[in-house]
Image 1 (tube, rainbow, N blue to C red):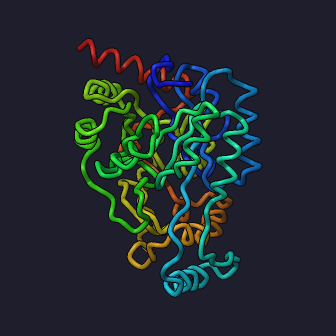
Image 2 (cartoon, rainbow, N blue to C red):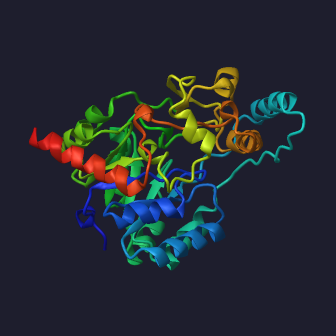
Length: 344
């Protein structure tokens, strides 16, 4: 079975759902000795299986797949309908999908896919997998990672029997991995959260959230992390599947800050403040994934038009430092800077 010690470079590419973590990026990161990650969220089981095979055919190095856990059923349908009506008034040509009470993102089917394809590493976001799923994936040889955002979540994950924890701080771009959809996310900075969790668990810890420099990486590894996970830092690389308007916004002077918003999905996520967030964050119901499915049409239209103000511009706090060129070049530079920081 894979362990984090198998990595030549202890850097993991964050699984960014929505297209950024394309197979090209996964292969590129794994080929230079890091750990590339496919984002399983929102994909059908068939598409996920096809991408796993694609990656397996192009690299012999380990890689991972991230799965979203099923969420609690819808609690406030009227609020979601009101939000849909508001979006419809603003986007009269848009066609919105039906509002489903539940949506498990094909979790059971995707577990079967990663087992069938013997994926080396599987991580989880928005909760913990059932005990039987943990046992079956372990039997298939997968190394299991739970995303946690607090000490209580870390303790629960240890009890569930996973092999490592991804400690996600508030600086992270995209969705916070909180177990409860409607909870306010914690604000303890990543370094402090790492220390707090390291005091109560012995599992290997990966840290994620706003990491963009060798100095940060060196400091976090010295504080007890076995590896670091980067997402935003790879968004502008050649292999990134992120929409060009999203990539450009990271260096656009019109976008000056990141904020935590529920506007696009009904779940807390960090992104660049844009017109959509400003217009809707105060009124969006905290209902995920129902809100995500409502805004999907609006986001797709904005992507076609190249309009960053209608996109979910997920980005961590270090977004201005996102590098360009190949992922291999970006990772090599970060790792060289990490060594330089240790020496100095």
